[in-house]
Image (cartoon, rainbow, N blue to C red; front, side, top):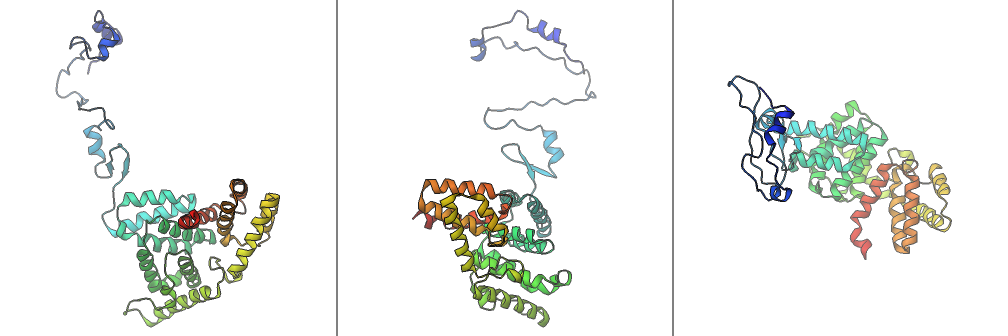
Amino acid sequence: RETLGRKSIVSAMAGKAIPLAKFLDGAGPADDLPKAPVAASQDEKGTKYVMEWNGNGPLPLPPDVVKANENQKMFTASNRLITKPPQTVEEFKARISESILEYFDSADVMEVIRQLEELRMPLQHHQLVRRAIILSIERSDREREMAAVLISSLYVRRVISSTQVFDAFISLLESAEDIMIDNPACDGQLAHFLADAVLDGCLTPTFILEPPPLSVNLAASARAVADGILVDAARRLREGTAVAAPTESLAVPLEEVKRTIESMVAEYLQAEDVGEVARRLREGQVLQPLRHEVVKRGVRVALQRGPQECEAVSRLLSALYGGVLPAAEIARGFEALLEEAADLAL
């Protein structure tokens, strides 16, 4: 296809200049703009689209772009490409598994929420709880801690309901015997997740203390495994131990941990010695799975005292971030504070 050169365009417009004010008002003859030559035949390559646009919102997308992507993508009002929602539950499970694995790398709860919104299957959100726990069981303590933080965060933000958490744990209990084939220690880890869910308010204690409605068709051996998990979780609640801890060696009375943290925060607000707080944490006076309590109790004490103390605690958390105070524990602490926001305002 022939095109006009720069000289031709200048020549075509020569002698037709108008004042800027008139141009902005739409004045001037209809043929002010140069006209490109028309293709000599219909076989020539290239397509020209003419679209109407009222100036509001994004420019419309050409039809060929839409057609090329219509089977894979969908377009929003902002012309942002987002993944087409899954058509089956199995596809949803595969997609949330990818989201959870990405979360284990990034610790970005908001990205998980965004992806869930794009998938548009809210009635299947219990699958995320189940997949997060199973995928974390196959990994290290870090991922298990992050999974517990994710579940608590999604519950506080009302992305998942207590009913969905309930359904997820029923499914996990019924399949625990099968999960133990590849992960023999999963019974204790599931008890840990159960107790965490109760402490975070995602489940009521009756789920553990009273027999949940497991399937009547469940084999005797599978039911025995499920009952053992419930007994273990009930023991943790009854003894008030640090249920967030991944191993029995971390069984520390929770009230003792709270007293230690309150003492640590009070001493820090007097001397503002970040190094002393870090040293006490490194020595294990507050075990890592419970360090979100440092965030929670530090902020609560600071809010009760005044602006200077709030600034001091903010500096403390910033200094400890990423070291003795992992990002996941900071997130967990603030999620707990969000849940208590109404009480804190009083």
